[in-house]
Image 1 (cartoon, rainbow, N blue to C red):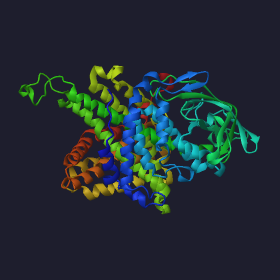
Image 2: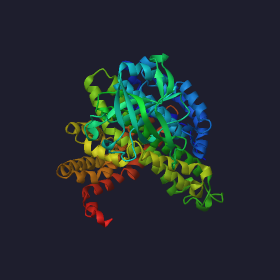
Image 3: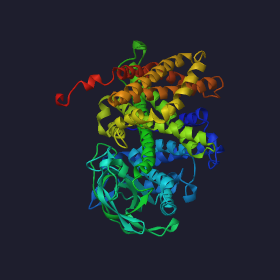
Image 4: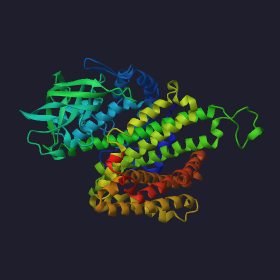
Length: 599
């Protein structure tokens, strides 16, 4: 069965000891984000997720959403859980207090998102998209739209979606056909069909606010002609907190998809038939606005990868401690038991520690990125805000792709640990694999994330984004290479970091003459970058663990295990960066030598 208990001790270690999250309370608007407040929030969040959401995970997977005559119903228990979720204020944690939100750091949303998706990823899709819609409106909406829609997105009475994909185009959004025609009084008539719309129709909220990409009659060709519109499922009368729903708009759900996983999340075909909509941002500049929501969603999906990896690890560990098979190779015949728990076997331990080392390293990287997100919006110094924002830009494709790849790996390892029980549905482990596989695909496939990293982020501002990572990582390595307690960990990262910088230079040079050279190795480069970035996080955590080990106040085992897990990562997982480096050095030739007719 699936086992999950929020790893609060590790969360607190990352938040307080590694990141010093209480520093956020010194920023304007975040004064309430003290260490005590942060601890209270994550403790209460853990209780809610474990008590309310985890019990619904299996029924969500087995029964899924149902569709009949345009009406979508979520699995039994989801609506009550949603009412409890928004009623307790979890939806509004980081929403603008001017519109009913609590105004707490985005970092807290990351932590809550992890726990929500560890217990019930399908449920977590609904609030994730609503928060993304609110963020987009906060940044790009007019004052009237903000006053009308944000209070209801904050309190959860209305929810949000992002409507991009059409049957003929996904990543290449320049090919969309949905049309927007001016209808007077600042309104537009929206017509077209969108597919793969997560949470596009459901029974959880009173209204659904669709953020829709469409083209005006005078739109230029391609992505330069995309505009963004807000299209409510039900028309809205009034404004502010007094705004209320009216008649049905020209928005209908045509069907829902039958999927391999996240069955409790409705993935819909949404048809717009002269639906009333409102322009967000400037005409033909909609894609730029939509990236606010898209990038937020990508970070959220990265947290889904971490979340499923954590549940997979905990479930596999519990099983490995109970399941008996074979004798320990060290205890041998000295053990009185007929068979030992499988956790004594080296291969099982390697699998468990692989998941654990990735999870704890990924948590540190994700929370560190979330901290930068908060600094980018609330720090009083403009240069600090800019630098933090550029770190978030750099890390977004890495968080999305690397964390979901590792989450899928952890889920597969959990199946392997369970043996035959792993692929039997009643144990719930194979569900983790199905759910985790989707996270690698939606909100931009991981291959697209790799192209974004190599094609855009490496060269942006003449490489300044990269320097935000390379410079502090290199400085830490150089400062600690002779530190007795750390040098065994520093050396592997020093070598991997040097190879990553070399690979970056080679890709930049080759890519100038032939873009395919960079594209052909983009996935390998993102994996290498992720391995090194998580390795850097492990070094930072190891430094904290060494400092605390002598005065651990009864928590010595926690810090000792931190150091041992850091060693496992550096010596067992980080070496994969060398393999990625070798593949990068071969360039495109191995695949490019084939012609299309050779396939």
